[in-house]
Image (tube, rainbow, N blue to C red; front, side, top):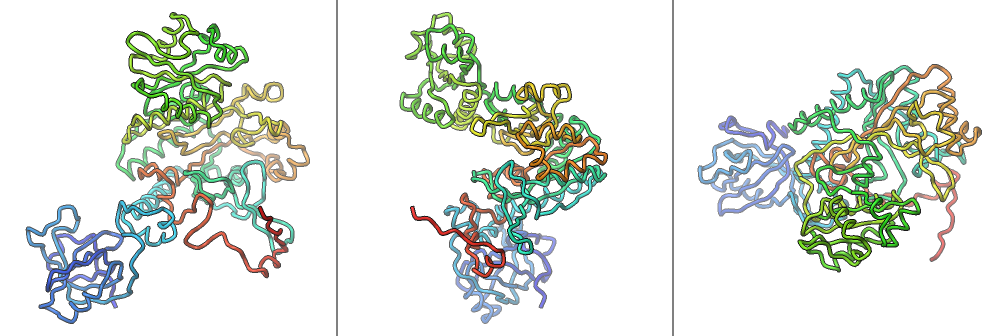
Amino acid sequence: MEYRSHKCGELRTTEIGQVVTLSGWVQRRRDHGKLIFLDLRDRSGLVQVVFNYEQDAAMFALAESIRSEFVITVQGKVVPRDPEAVNPKLATGEIEVQAEALTILNKAKTPPFYIEDGVEVDENVRLKYRYLDLRRPEMLKNITLRHRVCKLLRDFLDAQGFLEVETPILTKSTPEGARDYLVPSRVNPGEFYALPQSPQLFKQLLMVSGVERYFQIARCFRDEDLRADRQPEFTQIDIELSFCTQEQILELMEQMMVYLYKEALGIELTVPFPRMTYQEAMERYGSDKPDTRFGLELRDISRIAADAEFKVFRQTVAAGGVVKGINAKSCGTFSRREIDELTAFVAQYGAKGLAYLFVEETGVRSPIAKFFTEEALNEIVQTLEGEPGDLLLFVADKFDVASQALGALRLHLGKRLGLPAENKLNFLWVVDFPLFMYEPDEKRYVSVNHPFTRPHENQLDLLESEPLQVLAKAHDLVLNGVEIGGGSLRIHERELQERVFKLLGLSPERAREQFGFLLDAFDYGTPPHGGIAFGLDRLVMLMAGEDSIREVMAFPKTASASDLMTGAPSPVAPHQLQELHIQLAAKTKN
């Protein structure tokens, strides 16, 4: 039996007069007396099929039994539609197929939701019936775009001399970052593999191996609390190259983005992308991944606040903190209740309060205005570029707290005011991240990125004496406030790598236990190298104009890391645990 001579969505007036064989799913059936119209759908699109009682009563009766999502094969002649029946919204809208033969390949139950775009249904229902959800044109479009992006990335990197190399999925646990997913070894009782959080160590070893230019579209796993843009398993575009400068990496990745957007979406990007240091990003936007599509930039008024009578501001500055503000343009009509809501919002980010000034034609209005001279108030308004009708908002705290709280408030207000331009693409490189941060709970330094990131060469002598002043040769690529990729130059000398491990509190024995294979490799001639990794899910999400990565993944997990379709994770049989030498602890009652 021949299932298909043509695809449904590809028929045009050029096929008029031809007898075609089509297979697909029934989108809908419409009865018009002695005529039945079926919209037949396959991956390419829809076409209208007509069954005529006068031509074949038996086939007409069979067509009457068809329901939505039945899978059928139809043979028939392509004919032009009557002029009044032409559908300009449909690619096949000028023709239809007069059915001559019909085979029902499979029947279908009534789906739990309509197989069409814009369907309003609980996301959990969509995830449970994902195989139906993926039939919807918008989901198919997203999956097709994802395929296209992967194909274009491979083409570009291959042309640039990169080799695609697969790295292990079962590897060694190095519990310094997020939690690993652990896999027990049956043949090595009591020992475990870890699923890779990234191919970081292996791609560095490939540089030691002389591969020089590597890439991989890699599956990665992290056992961490989920957010809207996180999944326990995700896909990474992993890239590493030897004998390169940081500038060469950035320029090459810009070329890759230009190629990708032009070929996949027909969009021309302008390069080079702007560059911004981490410090500048935090000072101006309160975020290391700023959305630069709109203003509302943060301003520092610490110098003015230091001399004010307002004790909260003055004491904060005296203690080494800062007072930062943001101008909520045209928000001078906000009520006290709305300001209380903003105060509660910034409290989520550690802010202890939110001061405010209304800018009016006659001056400023605020409970704190009496603590400032008229000259100081004018200078504050001028610093924040305030105009009548504006609302100036302030947080006084440590630099990180004030910046992050106002940075989050900036995004909140920007969204509320509809400021980010939906059709704008603002790429931005953020560079010069701190190499370390201090973790007070653990009373030790931790890597801002990972322990293999290279410090700036002119700051190596500060590693032991002032580690928090050392900057990393790291780079993140941000698009519209979303980090889509991050990387760095790497440490390639054993001595320097051991110094960093020591600063992180790793004893020589522990460093040897966890990373001895990498340190040994550095003894055999390691080239300077660096790279970057892009989150494929996030990148495709932004290219598709979606708000969640689940919309561009075929089979994503829920926010609780479960698969509603298959029921994973699930208990396993006792004999399976026995083979793995695992005994489960008894569940404790609450």
